[in-house]
Length: 276
Image (cartoon, rainbow, N blue to C red):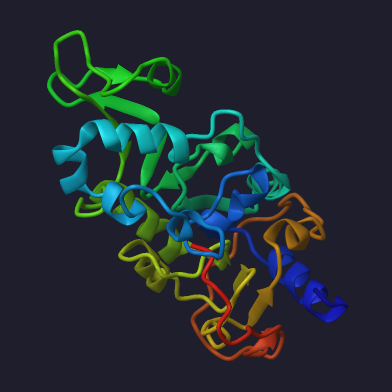
């Protein structure tokens, strides 16, 4: 990130009081959790069955043993720790600058970093429920089970994560849309915005302060005044957080703004892989 882009990003954050962060798999890669769609990501690796098929409702029902074998091996990372990006976002929230995090991740690292308002549109590995009686089980319990985890009542325990062919939690989606509609800045990080319907949520943001930070920004160059083809931890590490000391301003309407010129920042490279 050059000095001009860094200054522009800092000014956007300084001018904002209700930032919403919309993030994806690229936020957690530096915590050792692989993403899905980049080279070397989960979907590019070879398994007995394609990962996209394994992570479907149909496969979960028809081959639960195979599902849980893959789930424990590739979807749960109990030793992962929050990285600088997670911690910086928690710092922004503590300073009264950030109102919510909307994440596509299921790892719980934002909460581990100290963030309080985290909307998990794809669920969480830390919540597991018996499909028969509804009893709750934590991640530690699941890690100490083998095969298909079963509740004391005899029901199968399912992770509270959204599989392919399943609907997203509409209550969470509605709350995320509400926060986005009231935001005065939107930071999109670690995502290629290729996962639907979650990525459609950003349409609820109507302001002018919009930033995209991703290792690959191909096809996203015109979507924000500032587009940074960078590692999100490197970008956020250069941000200075100033606590809010004055009342929040009303969100600004979508328009051209001389301080945030359309198309500033770096552009993407043709053919670069999506990060998730």
